[in-house]
Image 1 (cartoon, helix red, strand yellow):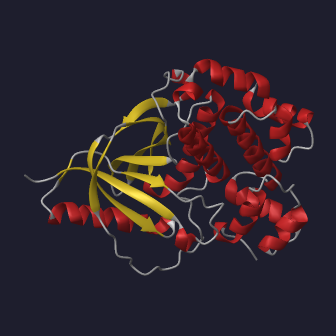
Image 2 (spheres, rainbow, N blue to C red; image 1 turned 45 degrees about the vertical axis):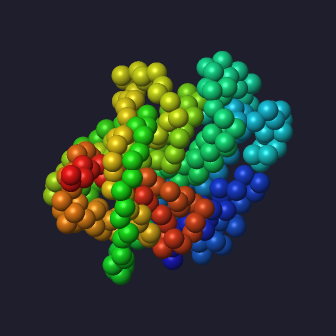
Image 3 (tube, helix red, strand yellow; image 1 turned 60 degrees about the horizontal axis):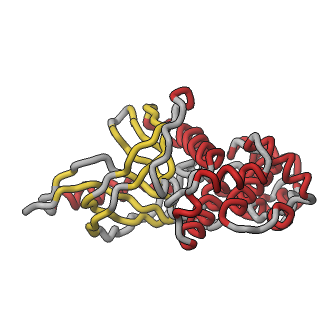
Length: 310
């Protein structure tokens, strides 16, 4: 019987396809449960019912298409699996508090679509679509009883990165509460970026300001193509910058539970090479868990700001 997040990934992948309507019978078959049981299990594991997950992903995709293409609203509705123009308008209003036409007008009035190249718009569309599917699943444990994974070798290099504007929310939590906190923070920040029509420059990121045996202070958010107006203080969301300068970087392939190994490898590399840590490390979640069903193939880039000797 499916009880772990790992077991429901095939169903999430099917639900993330906007061309296919929600079919609880099919969802149940994909996870080996009755339709009713499958709905309860998926809601408990992901925080959303299959129908709500499907609807949110499709309306988010519609929002992206409205500002990255010139397609008619009707054509966007059809492309995103809505039965009619009116169905999209109702759902769009419930999600964003406005109509698709007004959403497009507002985004274009802000001027950012004219400032971006076509490739930037394509990147933003892909990033937003990917994050929408599984923004609440990054760092979530795959299994209630973790399986031992063989240690993997990490290739570490240095590079110079430009500072990047980031929309984020800060939390201080018990170390074992990190997955639960991220499941709240990343969807909130992503949702705000979508509501404001802010163009994203990369997948979701988490920066670790403080790590202790008991507590973790982190910033979870999404990088933007440009600095945006500061959100209202009551939202708890802020605008800041990711480090610009030299970083040591490695890529972790596999489940999130083993990401600590990547950080440890970077820490050892810094010590062995006489480098100095000069900032908070961060993770960038390259792979969409809803699109890649095998956790062994999930990719996460880990960055650590450093000062090199000499």
